[in-house]
Image 1 (cartoon, rainbow, N blue to C red):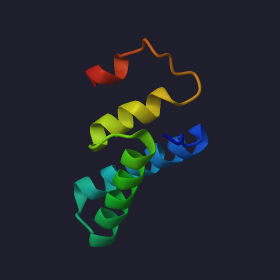
Image 2 (image 1 turned 90 degrees about the vertical axis):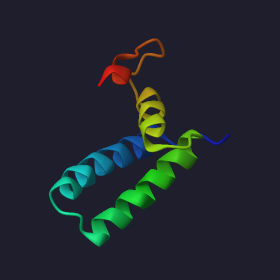
Image 3 (image 1 turned 60 degrees about the vertical axis):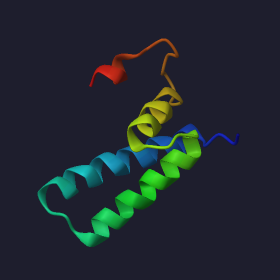
Length: 75
């Protein structure tokens, strides 16, 4: 499986988090479409099938993440 560069994953996570905040207040079609695009990209990049698993997998690939660190699972 190809691995996305950690910088790309970090940017995708940051953009997804920002769009999630924007979408919480107002469900704009453009915001929703971009979230869907990022969700798809994160899932493909991490070999997962849902956004929660993709975010966890992507965060574990970022610099400084420890494989045994499961603190992201208790959010």
